[in-house]
Length: 593
Image (tube, rainbow, N blue to C red; front, side, top):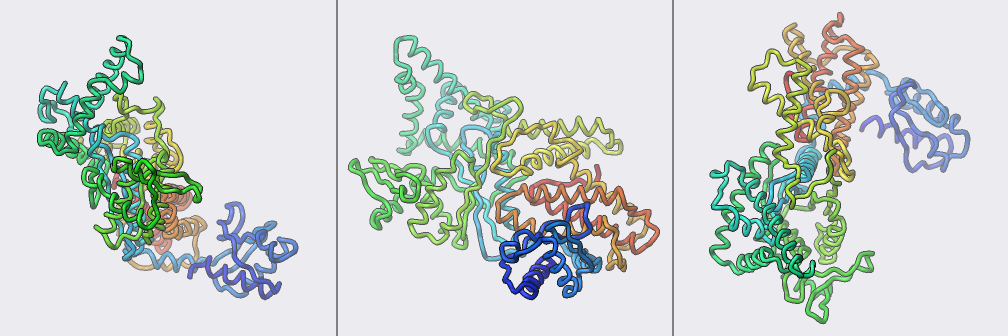
């Protein structure tokens, strides 16, 4: 039982004993820096149960707790806040219990499995800045869920069919002259993306020409010859026409190889893959079954719908009148298929932008009405758009911020700033390039993940690589500083394998241990809220606390050997927690910087 649980029980006991009342819950908060104490009990909420002056109530409860809890050595009351002082031995015992624990705060994997979907790109263009936020969020949430004790399957559904794919194919046939990734020197996803842009350019030119010849704008948009060709190609693909299917396979193959390079550079991976070309017919059988059960209803034109008006939503189509599926049908079928493929899955997380909020409300409700037990554990990890100072992105016009280009730019920005700081004289060129990439990608990932997923981000590359403030490089630099301390400690022959014999703690040591205590709860809270931001900002707080400790307490210069050992042990544990927390964010840490 942790100290908060002990205090909670004793506060309830005190209220019962002193006032004869039953207190339902106890509210805690960290003690403000300018007051003495380690944990604060907030008295004001108790006034709903106990009437009286909050300061007097606090004094009475504080006296009772000090008499009945061994770890409490003092207290003070400031208005309605009861500040409790915990003895040093409590914190020392805790720290000695975790010094040699690997992956402190991580929970052993259980049988409770969850599937996390992220990335899910279209195969007609490269990954862009929006995909980067998607991938980083999905990957990090998967890792946090794993650390919280869940079994996790990482997956994506690749949107590899449809009119947008055919547009790239038609443009390649018209303008490609047989170009391949090898002959063009381009990554396959970039090559195919260029033809998607080329299609849009030709399409707009044809519309303008039709309008100039007297065709109505809306009719021109529907009758532009290149669009009709793409629509014809889609029909051929759906009919399984050999030549079309072969071209589709070839061009998608180029894209997949390109994606693999991007994913590797970004440091994300997947356990299973689903393809829309395999799943787009799924769900139709489920709809037929749902019709029999009365979950769905058929309109006069033969289309099938579900009425969700009683649930505060609207009517939603699940099958068109010609019997073809809509996206909702496919998503219903895919969700069910995933549980068939992984029978231990008891929930799913969909990492998709907030423009799809309504879609997922409807999807989850339909699955619930169909009677699937796991439907109560579906979560839409909804996130806001990422903007750059230069403005919005448009993929059709080729003005998207390409993921590969952004990662390369981040590495270059890190190189420029690192060289200005001039701390890499003893690095060879290969070591420098490796470090620049680690800093650049760390900056990018941390800047995006430290923000609550629901919020829109204005991503400033230069600001993200600042070596001061709440940034990835600042935390990486602190980790590297601790590694330097540990190397010096080893060269001095300091042995840190045994428990420290220190009996009293410096205030800064105590604050650092208190911060370490929060890590396991932070992981669980981040998992419950699907929020890497909680882990990121915890790590920043830990680093700030360590730097304050480093500046005010002598570590290797301490005369008392036992204090010196404790401070090196503390430094080592802080570094381990930084490394573990950053692994959850997909960020690497350098041994030197």
